[in-house]
Length: 124
Image 1: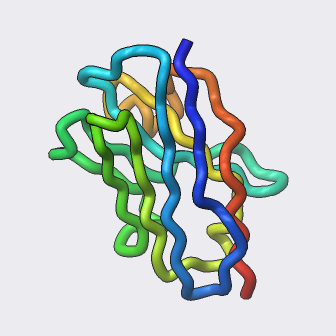
Image 2 (image 1 turned 120 degrees about the horizontal axis):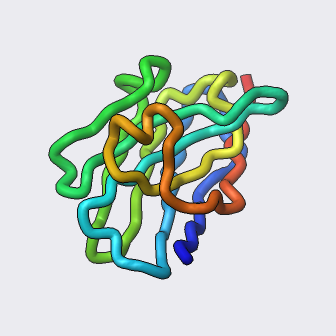
């Protein structure tokens, strides 16, 4: 069983920054991509960003390009999301997950059960 624990969310003013972390445990993650997703109130969960095992390939949804940066530390089985220039529309619960490829993750195909997520609230 894979366990995913997200942290780092909070309340921030528009234009501010937050750094999210997600620690994965319970299995080996060799060759797995890792990614971030979010779910705003009343909306479906959506893909945000993903990073390949090596870190050489990264993909972002258009709405966060240039503002968010995904990274990972394989030694710690941890993925990060640095969020800058936050907007009110970034308000959501943020989740991480693992997947076979970045492409599959971008289509919401993931390989682990969802964690509890971390709430990000951006005030305008």
